[in-house]
Image 1 (spheres, each protein chain N blue to C red):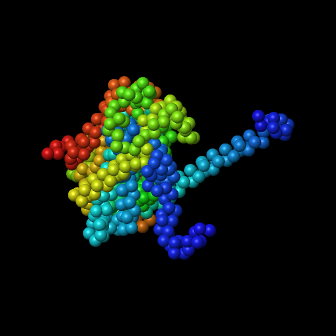
Image 2 (tube, chains in turn blue, cyan; image 1 turned 90 degrees about the horizontal axis):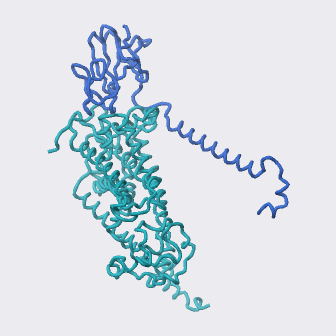
Image 3 (tube, rainbow over the protein chains, first blue to last red; image 1 turned 90 degrees about the vertical axis):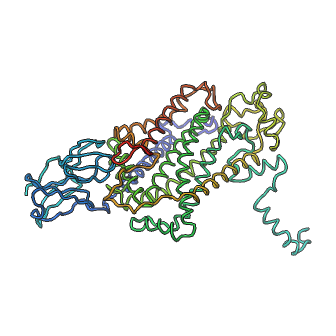
Amino acid sequence: MSTTTHPAAPESTAVVSRRRALTVTSVLGLLGAGFVAGFSNLLFFRPRVTYGEPSRFRVGKPESLPLGTRLPLSRQRVTVVRTEAGVAAISNTCTHLGCVVATTEIGFDCPCHGSRFDADGMVLGGPAPRPLPWFQVSVSPSGEVEVDTSQPVPTGSYLKV
Amino acid sequence: MKTEEEGFLATLQNLPTNVWRSIFRNPLPSSDLGRSQTTFSNLFLHVHPVKTHAHSLRPWYTLGLGVVSLSLFVILAATGILLMFYYVPSVEQAHDRMLDLNGTVAFGVLLRNMHRWAAHGMVALVFLHLCRVFYTGSYRAPREFNWVIGVFLLLLTLGASFTGYLLPWDQLAFWAITVGTSIAGYAPVFGEQIRFLLLGDRVVGQEALIRFYVLHVAVIPVAISVLVAVHFWRIRKDGGLSRPEGLDLPEVQPKFPEALAGKLEGLAPAAKTAKTKTFGVMGIVRGPFNKVGATPDNTVYSWPNLFIAELFCFALTVLLVLVVALLWNAPLEAPADPTHPPNPSKAPWYFLGLQEMVSYSAFWGGVGVPTIFVLLLLAVPYLDRGTRGTGVWFSRHRILGLTAFTTLLIVNLVLIVIGTFFRGPNWALVTPW
């Protein structure tokens, strides 16, 4: 209908009309802008630093951890273990729903929903789906044992000291 | 001119009237024209149509659940804004501010109680409203999308309640959110990422508190307000509340129960001009119930019939919340202690069904089943394309859908009851008595 009233319209023999090209470009531009905005927001909401407990911390010289030590650190949610195999750090956060497990004679008990773990953090019973993770342990330049809770390691990874 | 002749004294004398009339264009209506004008010339009232079908005003049809839900939201917004004047979203101060509200702030306890009980009430009432809409088949065409909006409003209500749960920063708050967000962590692939984004950290702490605060006082309330506006507007655009089809057909009309003839007699009269009625643009609204000339008029004027009913629901809600808030104090436990979880730690009650399922299967209980349930809810109006039994409670034409929905409802309720009352230390089964 509009083509009959607009004498210029039939002359448009280009493969894509100007109006259509502009429409497609605008739509793509808007979609692109929306995508960039969404992605930027995702980056914005993902903090690069966290303000809580630092994930790396030192727990003292190896000499301060005698053989047989099982030292629960409640703030860092980690139990530092010293055996003949070396030093290790086992998470104290229950893999079920994030409660803090309590250290017992045979291992760990979760007070929230009854998950039980052995001394190595393997599941003995209850709803926990995974064993307690172990964290990387290293010796810092000052000679202190350092735990990094952002670096999980396989169960049974001891640091020889 | 005449007014100039009247002089300054007369201008002063007429001042109150002139001011009043500049605000309220219409006097209190005494005619049908006036009732129409009152409704459609007011920004807030014109969310409703000028006339409402008599069936929509039957208390036992809607039970007023939608209006009560909105009333609770209004109470929550009002008390919430007042509480914001004293609350500080910081892990050092939040709990102290709760003690201040309970101890030193005038009416602090009352406001906190009202806010807490209205919040629990809103979760329950929005869910009951969903049940009402399902059991009357009101989600069916042309109201499918309003049902979808309603499901999102239910999810937003749960979100508002969940984010508010953390703010008192007591033991209950801390561990309920720890447990609740851990359930989110069970989502496949992105679970831990989602939890990290939600908390702003790996554990519940200051970052989580400020995030939940902003969501609770700004993002979610605004989203709810916008969706509620659309929800109400669409009721109107979809031809009013659902009602049994054929209710308005001429041959059925004489049999239409006493409602119109007797019970509603005291109400403002409906127009008796079915045949000669003229329609404006609103006459061409989509939907099966609003065809020009095809529908005898079983409508009554919204002013005052509908508005009085809504005002009654609102007043009753305020009264009930006030009474409950005066009788029972909102609990406040010891300050949050991230090193000592209470035994057992429980999520908010409406998530205890999930937590109960999580104790059997982490993924299916926490993520799989709830996702399927929400998707099913969203799909309901697009799966059920029938028309028989719409607008009737528990219609036997819908026996299959009713049975399926009721089964899921009972399972969820049983799980919530088990999680709330029958789970003790170490999540062991206990008896509450």
